[in-house]
Image (tube, rainbow, N blue to C red; front, side):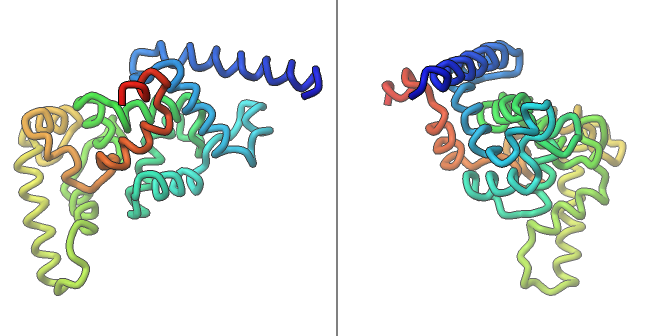
Amino acid sequence: MPAKSKKNFGIKRQEMAHKADHLCKMKNCHFSKQEVERLLQLFKEFTKAVNTEIKRGKGGIDRSKFRDILHQHFDMTDDVLMDKVFRAFDLDNDGYVSEEEWVLGMSVFLKGTIEEQARFCFGVYSMRGEDGYISREEMYLLLKNCLVQHQQEEDAEEMQKDLVELALKKMDVDHDGRVSVEDYTKAVAQDKLLMEALGPCLPNSKCRDGFLELVADEKHKQRF
């Protein structure tokens, strides 16, 4: 490798190490520095085609690429929910998942506490994220995809209504006819099964463990 290339590689390596050091010290990051570096390397691989834009402080993982990642690595297939998960990662709503959004989003997605993941799921389900509410109408639309497709339309509609009323009864802690983030986190704290009651938006254990193995640091791997 020419001396100039080695120097550039060294600079890039230092930049990545500096970013990883900064991110792994953030309050809501549950990854080690080496795990963050692996996540940043994956981010770089996922965004090869737009690296120039990223260097200018623009771009990142777009909606289409993010959906590919969810499908290939986490077996997610529901287009509506995948778009909503993308929106939950894209905190600044610029249409891209940045390096920081990628690392911190994956921290909650893969390693979050019950409260963090409950807030994440609520942000996926609510049209306005954590600042909004989940209304009866939103629940109805979300639960549509949970029903068996070949059922009679009238039966399916009746079942949707029953499921909505059951979900409201379980989650609407303050009984105001809608579910706030406070309602939701309290309900999930009492019954974890309510976490994804309105549709799967977190990885199953097999996919989660498989992806964590991709980013695991050497110390972790030696323990297995």
